[in-house]
Structure formats: C-alpha cells, structure tokens
Image (cartoon, rainbow, N blue to C red; front, side, top):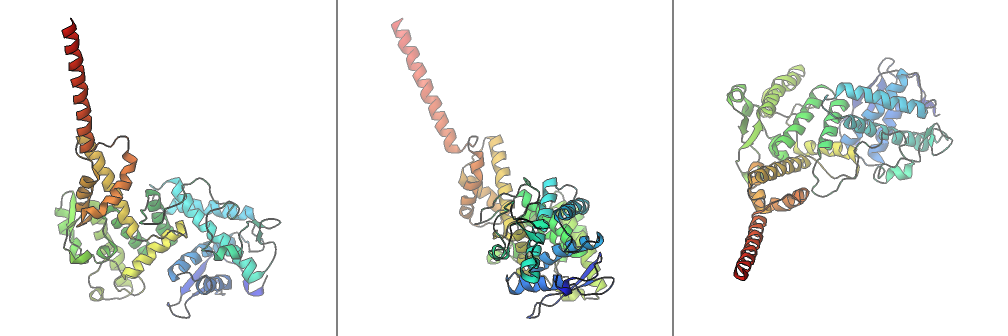
Length: 427
C-alpha cells in the first residue's frame, strides 16, 4: 500500500471542515497521535472534485467512512487485513449502535436501512481506495479478494451507482423495505421518515441532530412549506401561550406563499418540543459561542457554524442530501414532507366521510384538505387526492355512487311491484 495510507491506527478520528471555498475539504487526524488521516482527506477531495458531490453530501459520506476507520482501529485492523468477515462484524456493530442511539419507536427495518446506507458508502470507499488511490489487486473485487464486490470506479461515477444489486453490496441487510421510489412530486413515506430520523440521530450529535429532527417533525406534522418553517420565531412559541392552549397551538408564519397570513395548527406536544428546543440546544449554542441573540432575528432555526438564521437553501440541502442516502436518484427535499402530511389528511378525511356516509368525491375531499394545508386553490390538490384515493377503490362511496345505487334499488322495486300486479291480475 502507498505509505501515506499506512499510519499507526487508533480508535478515534477528529475532523476539521474547511470553509466552502475553492480549498474546501476536510482535515482529518487521529485524536491521540495527531497524525493526519490522508485516506479520508483524499477521498473527500475526490468526492468534491471528481464526482462533483455537494459539500453537505460529502460531509455525510466522510462521516460514514470515519466510523468505519475508527472501528478498524479499535479492532487493530487495517485496510490490508479487512475481509468480508470483519466487514460483517462492522455491520453488526453499527446495527447495535444505531439501536442504542435512535428513537426506540423506530422499526428494526429502519435501523437496518440506516446501517445499509453506511455499508454501501464503505463499499464505495474501498473501491476508490483500491482502484484510484492504491491500485492494489485483492482489496475488493468479484473474486479472489478480501472483500467481495463487483463494484468498480466506472460504475461508481454513474450517479453513485444505480440500484442495490447484491453483487455490488453483498453484505447489506436484505428485505428491509428499500423498494424503488417514483420521482415526480415525491411523497415521503412513513419508512422514509423513520430513516431520516435515524440518520439525523446517528450521523450527528447534539444541537444539529435535534434541530434537524425537529425540522423533520414540523414538516410532516403541520404540512408547512420550507420557507414558512424556516421563518418561525421564538416569540411565536411563548411558554405561557402554549400552556394556555387546548388541543392545538395556532401560529401565523411570517413567510407564506404569495404573502398570505394564514393560521396553521401545531399539535400541543410539537409546540412544547419547539419551546424546549429554543430554551435548550438553541440557547446553549448561543451561550457557548458567545453569539448575540439579537443577531438571530429571533429565528428559531440557526446555523450551528455561524449562529445566523438558517438559509432556505441550506435547509433544502440538509434534507436533499438525507433523501439521497435512501436513493441517489431520488430527487426529493423538504417539500416531500408536506406531501406526506397531505396524503395523511386525505386518508383521514376519506375514512371519516365513509364512516359518516358523506360525499367522498375528489372535489369535496380536495376542498376539505386544502384548508389544513393552507392551499388557496383546492383544484390544485385534486390530482393528489385522485392518486391517493386509488387505495380506497372498492369501498369508496361518492354522492354520485349513492344516487346511482338508489336509482338501481328504485328500479328493482318497480320491477317487483310490476311482477306482483301481473301475478295478482292472473289470479
């Protein structure tokens, strides 16, 4: 192996990220000795300069490889000695760690999908290490290799490898709900929400993790658009006002589409969590770094690097990068959470109307759901309502359906009466 990648291995790596300039990248070093970790630094530059991956995505990728290298160090292993056996042990160790760190309500499959995402990044890294950096036969390959995989650099450069072929990633967990996703107007599934929550909980620590999980929950529990969520202010979530509220807490976001001033409902528990975040991680960050609260414009969500209000584009990047870990081809960001909220409300509205015997036409459902979504034109929701209601075919009852059924019953009664009259006349 090339000498700069063969250093004394330890069990902890520190990262220092450079500003997003032409020299952007990461400085990585072993915590105890202070020796540079060139493999991580060079791989980061490769991702940014050759694969042209976004800065935020590159940070996520490097975090996964950092975890892998720290595991190797703790087990007294190196790149030269890692095999499928050690890679499977790393996978199982990460699964145990994810179970311990993430929300206990997450499913086992959600935990495994998180680990799969990390393991795929390791396969990509080992492929680069052999074919780009080391050119050493036997590290990873389809046969006669320490780590078995048919992944190669050419395939990696084609959109970070399409699909989840077992030949590319033999050791990932199978049958854990990683099916294909449609690409237009993407709606985050419940499984996606579990994955995103686990990803934020395990790929970052402290304030940033709690901020991103809170942003996630606001998105799918309220249906607010990105700009509206990002414009929320601390003063809008006063403790006294929340305590005085009943089932929901009403807020008028500063930033709304077309300058509207519509009121949105927040579940009480969510409003309380927002206040806890304001008084906890947000306040602690400002105090620890001696940043002034007056520089925040009273905004709730701030950058943990500058203390300034989080930019809308940054929020999109955070969630776009996270969705990309589910599937590199998936073009989804924060708005996918709004679609999840909309579909949930559509389901609830249909179920309620079926139970009460009310109209379940697409037009009526769209009109009802548009209110909770702050949508001024209900007609714009009709395509989504129509698509979502396909699952109710077979039990869906519209006003037109009921009229037709009554007409059929009436016709049948008339036939029966006519038959009875005819029979009576013959008698």
